[in-house]
Length: 396
Image 1: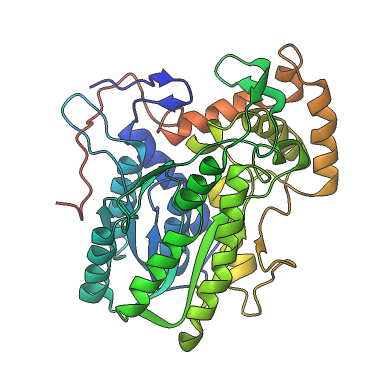
Image 2 (image 1 turned 90 degrees about the horizontal axis):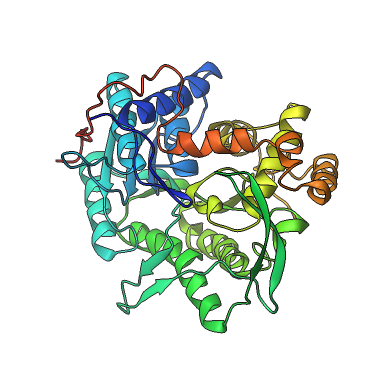
């Protein structure tokens, strides 16, 4: 079938298998061009099919030669209907990994469930014995709690009072004002359950009890802080409460892993275009301005550049892992540079529908969004028939 992007709001309903493969190939090429990393050798990535999770799997495999198991929840293709982008990303990743002689297997299902945890443990025992790194990079808006059976839904809301600020429709470039009503306590509680650290701890507990964690194991989850302009709806909002909870879990996990001399970390990463960030009001406008400023300064990074630098300059330098006063790894240092933030704040005041094309990088934002779904990739003929029925080699 000929596959073109079909948009509904901040979601693309289609994905392109050849474009996804090209995107994965380019990320692999970036990592290999930087040479070998003396890093992990047996890695479990929870949330492995897109974004930071996919970049982590690529960096571990093609930078450090690691065997990887990826867990995710993606939609398979059917005749005349494309899979979700993460399915095609994983199919391409496995193909490239196997061509290089690297072990790579995947599990598709609800990572919050006890069943998928057990399936993962069984696969580790059968094929790898133990893992020495666990990346936790889930980005689901809902969680069916495995113990209570309750379905929790996260909320993107400020806390305490209505928040009003500018936002942009990145499809049209229209800048408008948006007001978001404050969260109820139930919204906060549900968001913490979905996006906090409880499930990360459950994974570590299950893996440790099963004896599949290696001596010196590390586990990393990803977080975000961001600037003052977004904090009401992000870091001081419901998501921020969940991130506080996630970051606290790193210390709890480190205590649990002491018998193995293991460590839990949270890495605070840079603002990037993801399906999740595109859904949060205010964030797309901030990112479009940030991209322009950072590109002008020569410090802009995409997902793979971030994670490659995390591995090479933070996790595997041969010395202590540098952390901030709250114990977090900071790979958002380029974004939070005071000169960068001062320039973004200045542009924010001037940004409207007429000025944004000049002040910001809305074209770059839109391009990155399309890339998430395998579109606008160089070297791909989107007018040609593509095979939507691509299989993941390890999933039968």
